Length: 217
Image (cartoon, rainbow, N blue to C red; front, side, top):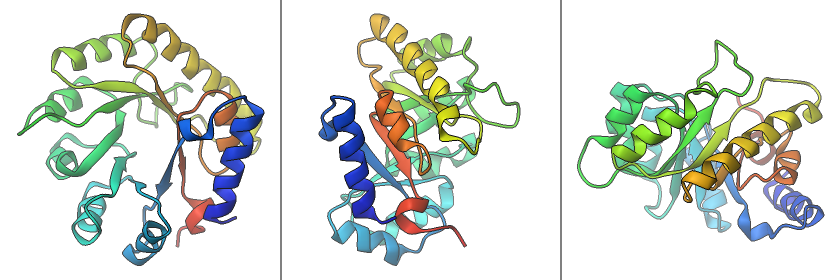
């Protein structure tokens, strides 16, 4: 697959779901990829890139055009917040109160966040439990942090259809929160193997790496 093929498949999935493809942001996950590969995609017109390691994102951002919109998608340690916060367009992995306090500190307005939800209740995976999301959201709002929506990484499966219930569950959670907090609209869900299903279930951000850049070395 290539970048253009991914864009075509996004458009097709959106049209099947009676959605406007312009509602969906493709975040190109560039972790472990060289600056040259990111620059090639930038020159093709793409602007949204995602990284999951703080130092790697900071190093790349220093070398690349300033109008890139950086999305941090990995588990973030509080002591790495200082590296990520100044350059992040959107943090996808807000998952606990200690990170919320760290993110709120610092000069200027904190960049907006998505709350990561552990929909599969996997102990080895980051993400707030379903019963923790509302309190975390309220704490973030009290700290003055804008919460734009939810993110999830469902349990791995060889069958992409197994992801659909997790996407539906995340959308249902978002819909409930939306009644109380009108800005909680975004859904970051779907990766290389399942982004079309995620779009069918309402994703507004999809995180695709391998289908664009190839397998990681």
